[in-house]
Each structure stands twice: as structure tokens, then as C-alpha cells.
Amino acid sequence: MLISSNTLKDKVEFFEANDLSTLEKQIAKKIDDNQAIMLEVHHVSHEVTIEPKTGKKVYSAVVHFKGVK
Image 1 (cartoon, rainbow, N blue to C red):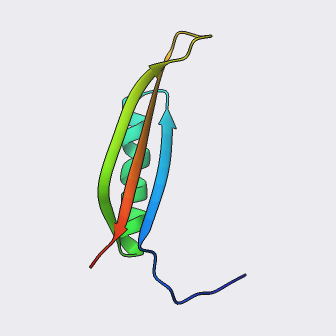
Image 2 (cartoon, rainbow, N blue to C red):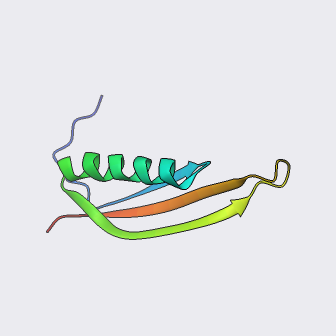
Image 3 (cartoon, rainbow, N blue to C red):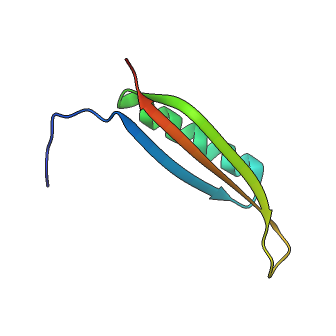
């Protein structure tokens, strides 16, 4: 295991869920987790697609976290 004293400056995380409320919960949990390591939300991008085989909606999001200055 490597231990480094360097702080994270940027972090991008991807999320996917079958409903919007689950996606929101996943993102909210990660925001709380990342605040503990001094990262805040810089940008959020999201979209809804239809799964071709099942016809169900799939919600996805990308969250860009940046270090707190």
C-alpha cells in the first residue's frame, strides 16, 4: 500500500441507476464522502437513455470534484 501526502486536485466519478431517486442518493453519498477529503463539486453532467433490449430508462451522471482552495 502506498501512502502519499499529496492532496487530490481533481476527481471524476461516474454513476448509473435505474431510477432518478437512486441516482440522487448515490451522488449525495459521494459528495459527503468527498467533502471529508477536501473535494467539492465543480460540475455535474447527467442524461437519460433507453436500454434497447428492455426498453427501460437508465439514468447516468458524471460528477467532477475539485480540491477546496
